[in-house]
Structure formats: C-alpha cells, structure tokens
Length: 304
Image (cartoon, rainbow, N blue to C red; front, side, top):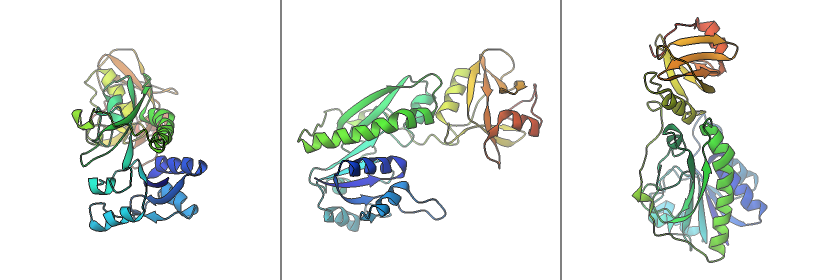
C-alpha cells in the first residue's frame, strides 16, 4: 500500500519511524515549511536522512497542492499532527482517503490546544481520536478512539509525552492495519457535534490568585511546559512550572513561605508550593533562587 505521511514535529517523526520499521511503502512525506531561525522539523530531518521525497507547500488550498497530492498516486494519507488546513479535495486525492490523529476525545476539545483544555477544566479523563477529516475544523467521521486517565497532579507534558504520544503512534498503526484489511470504519458520530476551542495561550495561562486554588493548580498543570502559566511581581512577568498543592489559609496572591522546597503562595482555599519558575528575560530556575535574587519573602504580593 502506497502511503503519504503528512505531519510535523516529534509525533510525525515517530509515526514515520514506525512505518519504516514495518517496511511500509512511504511514497512521500509532507510537512510545514521551514521557518527562518527555527530548528529543522524532526519529521523533515528523518525524511531527508532516509532519502524520501519531501514536500513543504506553504498552503494546501492551491491547484498546485492538489496536483501534488494526486501525483503521489497514494492509497492513503496519514496525517500526524498537522496544523495547516487541508481542503477536502486534497484529503480525498488518495485512493482510500486520509485519516488523522487528534489528541482528545472528539468531539470534545476540538482545536489546537486539545490537551491543555481538559486539564485546565479539571477533567480526569482524556484520550485520542483517529478520524477522517473533511472541510471543517477537526470534523469528520470517527475511525477509532482510545482513552487515558489524567492524574490529579499530571501536567500537559505528563499527559502528552507519557500517554497520548505513544498511544497515538500505536493507534495510527492500528488504523492503517484496519484500512489495509478493508475494514474502513466510519462511525455515524461527527466531530462538529462538540465544542471547538481555540488556542490555550498567554491570556488563558494568566493566573488569578482570587479563584479557587484547585482552578489555579489546573491552569498551571495545563500550561506546563507550554505556554507556561504566569503571574507578575511589580510589573515583571514570572512563569510558573513545577508545583504542588498544600493546605493553609491567608490572603490570596501573597507569599506565605520561602524554603529549600520552594515558594508557597496563597490561593483561595489552599496554597501552591512552586518549585520552578522562569523570571522575565531568563531561563527556568529553582523557585528559591528566584526568591533570593528578587527579594521574594513572606508577605510579598504577586499579581501586581
């Protein structure tokens, strides 16, 4: 079976690696254009290393892009972590169509920050969806879904790299095997029936110390490692990463303790012990180092 791999970053590379290990006939690799000043895409690096035809159109909405996909004479296209919009005509160009990986239990949490949002909302379960995309945004018939738990202290990085990434690579191979066997499953449920959520970005990662501490903690977990939850101290931005919840009462937003363990900040109904931060203009450091360098002590108020 002739396969086109369309994707980017580490997940796209992992899917391609698995296909090559299996001896699959990968006839082309497609990924986003190289950005000036940015490291080369891991998927593009592997394609070049293996002498596979590599294509990087700036848009898939052109007649030229459609002819490119048709020219591969592929049986199926596997979309692994794709951010560029691909129109229906291009998706349908391979003989059996195109299936795509999405790291959420669609139709819930459709959109580009599908791992951040369930953590930020305090969900205890998430998963992945393999589906047949159409002209909508993360819309189309579902091929398969797999679930995984979100632990009470797990971050975005824990859930993605520890669960959804390896599960996703396996699910892509399982889906390919179903397609090759002629078992092309198209469920009646369509992904547009759920919510579409935009980026979990800087605004969503800003901490409000007046809300319940459980919600603060969820935002920190959802933004770790990216985009990084943040607060301010005297107008300077401080991103907050590794932390834990502890009990205690006091004035929300105020530092209540500084120790080798970290910097403990009061929230509404509990406290957050912060172990690692990134002050504005620097790299990540231990919270106690930040406290020593910026004069942070019990009584210091954040969010100012």
